[in-house]
Length: 237
Ligand SMILES: NC(=O)c1ccc[n+]([C@@H]2O[C@H](COP(=O)([O-])OP(=O)(O)OC[C@H]3O[C@@H](n4cnc5c(N)ncnc54)[C@H](OP(=O)(O)O)[C@@H]3O)[C@@H](O)[C@H]2O)c1
Image (tube, rainbow, N blue to C red; front, side, top):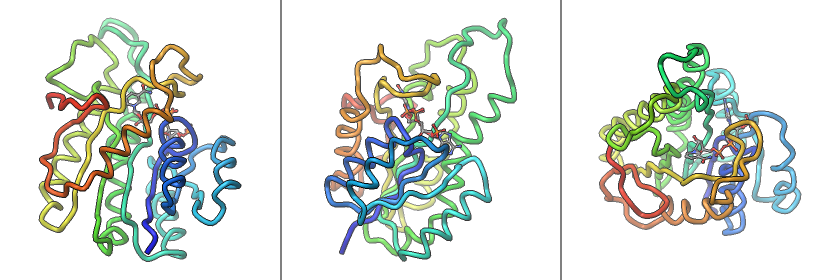
């Protein structure tokens, strides 16, 4: 039987690259599209029978429940969920003495932390039918409290630390029900987090996606949950 994945934040960057790699390996993929960027359309024409693009704003209850209905209309099971969607609005802030935008911070929380939980909660019935039950979360080193040296970036760092806590509690809840978890820092990538494509970062998203999928899809069901990075290290919580 076909393996089926759902990837959030798949319009561009790492999400789109993860979708491309999964499709090339034979997976059927539901790719969550937020805004109308064209990058996913190339994959849609290349992998017409494997890829379904679905509108999905992880920050919205309604959008997430509409997405569940769309997916349920065509399949009865998801094997792999990759919560990748993320935003960063606060990297220009390096001190509490600077101007802080609290609405932007709440937006980062809603997408980066609550968004992942919203998606897991809504799609869990479809995941329950799978024998794989693999839940993967793209976090960041910026969410590691133990490794933090930053003096700002409040909303992004706080929201990723909150995501890490959500994943820990999810794993406390669901491991005994056959679920396995991957919490991951993908490295510094040439993606669109800052609004335009980053040209300074060392990693193209396609390279980062290949490395990430090795971790997301490895065979071990009973691995202890860690915040794992693309170089193979476990970061402090
Ligand atoms: N770039 C890095 O160096 C880096 C480092 C560590 C961790 N990360 C993490 O990696 C993940 C992927 O980011 P990226 O680097 O690939 O950046 P990106 O190119 O900006 O991609 C982020 C994706 O999330 C989507 N998204 C934003 N808001 C959304 C929402 N409300 N609902 C659903 N999707 C939404 C974006 O879609 P739209 O463009 O259509 O809004 C886009 O497809 C994020 O979780 C990020 O925090 C990135």
